[in-house]
Amino acid sequence: MRLDPSVILLNNKFLLNKKLYFISGNESTLIEKVCDSIIKRYKKERNLNILNIDNINNFVDEDSLFSSKKLFVGRNCKGINKNNLNKLKNMDYVFIFVQENSSKIKLIKNIFLNDKDSYLIDCYEMNRDSKMRFLNIFLEINSIEISKETYWFLVEKLDNRYVFFEDALSKLLELDGDKLSLENIKKILTIDNTGKEKLFFSILKQNNQITQLYREKIITNSDVNDLYYYSKFFCMLIIESKNKDDFIKNIPKYLFREKSFLIDIYEKYNLNKKKLLIKLLTSTETALRKNSDLSVISGLRFLLSMKRITIS
Image (cartoon, rainbow, N blue to C red; front, side, top):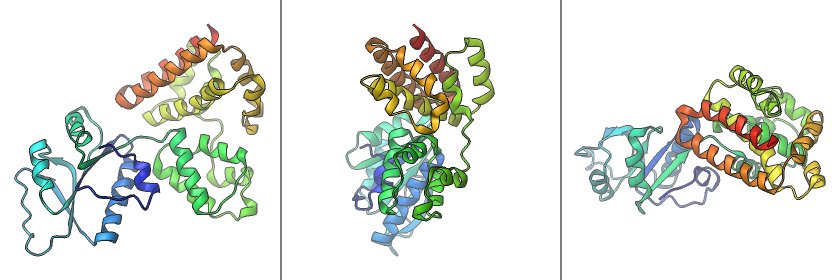
């Protein structure tokens, strides 16, 4: 069965009732956070001893006579197949397997996905929706109130990688309630407002100019994700806005310099173009998840395709 990592991290009442867990994906900080959270829950609730293993072929617990309360963690563990996993399920232990995505583990992930007695937990860089979920819970737990403008600023600007996202939120606790202004938050988070995300505002330039800017700004997979989800925010504003006034109302106030540009972009869209934009967002997000090694190429293709739809 598939389990969203946010369930593990946000819902302390969620029942951890499986014997087998497989944590994978391409976001190493989220993978480690989920693994650590599961381990801590089991230690607290069942007082399990934590042991490491590297191979489950012919697995034998040499200390079974001394303790039955055990959780085994296998990182890049060998011997994972359906027969071996079925043998482990008959034992009175919990097993967590951790391995980042690769072409070699697709079959393994399918085993966990189709097994009702196991959990497959895929950990990818956060998108706008997942950042909103985490931010909402954080604000509620800590009884923090912020303005709508500040809220959307955080959603857009906080890092897509969980450990940095979480670290940034923890800094907000250093501010008293009356100091939680957008200006003060910008200071303590040291967010760069002129970074790679701003490539979105270059989509009306010549293709060679866009390509040159892209090559200067976008180096890593993380850069591509930052650009994509920043661009997606404005794409969704275009798609979801019923009319021009509705669109203008939802433009974040701190983007006053880009306001006229955004309005110009919106006015170029009709219903058919919005449908094409939805298809582009869906195909790009799928490509970024499935082909992380090609994400830098996918990012440029996304930017140029968005321009083509806009000006067509």
